[in-house]
Image (cartoon, rainbow, N blue to C red; front, side, top):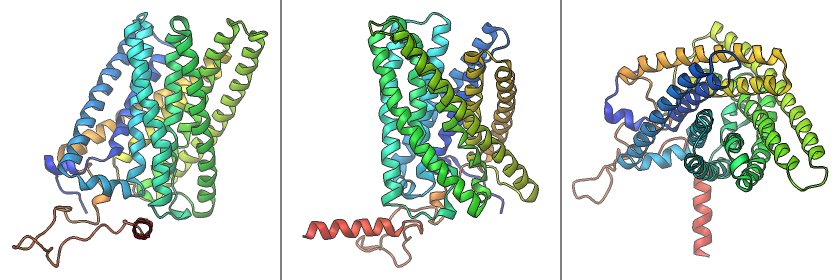
Length: 421
């Protein structure tokens, strides 16, 4: 069935958290341009600055629309939170913010930066740290206690809640480019917090990736609407490896200039271990990438994949994997990684452009605005239908959505029993 056109209010109602993946994808393209090993630095700076401005405007606009959505339709927040897939995309918000922080500090340093801007971005980074840890803890808790899941329904989107700490640690590593020289104490704190978040996020991502591979082997690729999520495992591999390289570089620099005995030796050891870990993550990401491409090509050949905002989920994972590839080329001074990273970056940029054009085309009529958490309810839900006396609901009053699971009902029952006792 062809999606019907949606008006302004209905577009706001169907504006899901997954739209923040647009900010993530746009932001990583700007960061890639700034990190390319070829081309005129001034031209790359101008292009990256353009992407940063566009990304910041999109981020502010999406925040405004999201706030409007939950003010106008407050009950949709609960419906979205209880949806087993849509709720996972709440984690896109801190990751989108992290891309803006990383791009801002990198472009600021190109113009020698200012201490005031660095401190402002450092403060925003702490907000992102709090949001990222909230995503990593609270969303999985909701998955455990409120959602019903089966192994054949698992998809790579399960990784989304645990990736924000990895992205925030990467943003912290980029911030240290400005802090190491001017604010060494703040740099040490930032490195310590970033390493902690990287450990948490990367460990959980590896655990979930293992179960995801098991799901692929037993049940095959996800259904059409979620098949593009096969690229998501590239995200923690690419971003995790990039964060390892950057953090080890700053740690080595700080410890080498400290009063710690054999500081240079410890710094070199940390750099070697981190580089080896980054290469391992790059290799794992390569395997996931090849599997994802083959799966997607086969799926496209055999059936049609409906276009939606979920397609934006391909950009950021590919982008950060390109970023790791470029960083390996810079650290190891190997042309293979430089050339491969540049080619991958060009492919990702073309993919971003194609998805952007398709998104703008479908946004004209509103067809791309679709909230799966509203599929099982009437368009006027959750407005309460009342009889003329205003006391009782009509017999045909809308029922709660079908995905309001037994876990939610069980939790409510336990709370009532505990309260009465």
